[in-house]
Image (cartoon, rainbow, N blue to C red):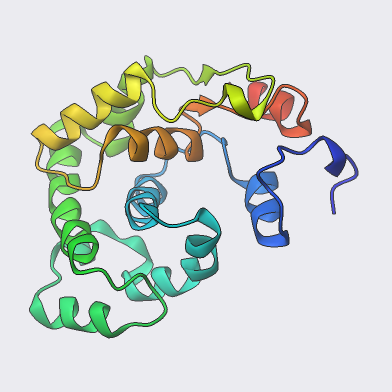
Length: 193
């Protein structure tokens, strides 16, 4: 447990969520494989709790070949069936199909921009947005930048990338620092800018 756990964002209620909150949430990510991982996981989370996805995360890593977008882009019908039978992940055909399609779209973005990192960070002018949230009630479900990202991803043939999913993705990978200002991680993340 962290010495300042009493100042942790209140959504991190169980041990797994606390580990994720303390080590990953809001940390600026510039690695394309990790960005792809969060695109897959945030889409899988739609309609479910984040704790459900965290519990299945290791299974996702195995099922999705370490989240290597090149490998996922080559998934065919046999892989789709394998994923649909895998009780360790969310077995939703639409989400599985979209993850494979999104891998293909991801590679096209990499080809066009040099990296997905360069593409996605351009939506925040390569600088994390400081949310300066004082209470959980201040956390929005989306933002104008998330809506712009969602619109552009959809234009590029991505699926399961609505504004709410995009905003959760932005929070997860540090495009926005939405730790409450009273949280011990807020200042730590802010200094990573």
